[in-house]
Image (cartoon, rainbow, N blue to C red; front, side, top):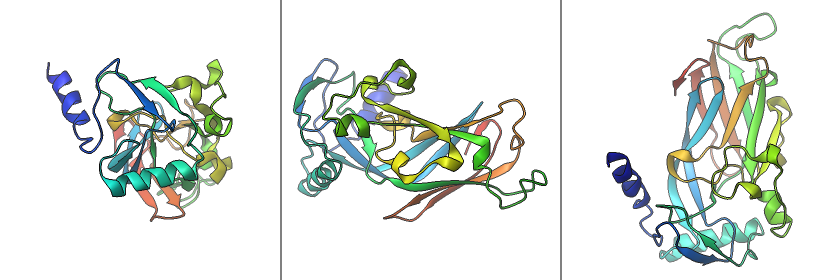
Length: 234
């Protein structure tokens, strides 16, 4: 009962958005039904690194606040997401589906804050030690909503998984084009911006070392998070 109550209270934080229960069908002109701002992230380390946003302002397709609705419309037009024109069935306790960041990253940096070895000294990049894994519905939108992901792509996307392209490459090879409309589309604590996986899980030299992750943007200040590459949340 307590878990259900927490979910309900979390959903009710969508104050200006129309709330719906499981099985409710809603019409939407856009695939992405809401965008959110964030100015901080959480880094969780297990066998790999999971980066989650701390969501702040939310802009919804059915926002009752005219300024927030205007911001939503601007973002939908910017991404060309204006011709979806379909009825979707919302999941339980979801007021929205396909919730995405309002600002794209322009780059990701990962450096060590202490000497690791002769190759990776304090302040040097360790991006080549990690594989970047992210999801984006951008290809689906650009295809006129016809793209369908392969079984390889079905990774950590819970709402419309067939519509999200998997982006997987060495972190040091990630380009701005790989970071457009990035995220798994989930709301609240379930939203994941991306994962970083050590290429050599058993022998990665960065294990136990202090690292700094920096997310860069064109239109907002960078977000940096220091953490130790060992199990924990930072």
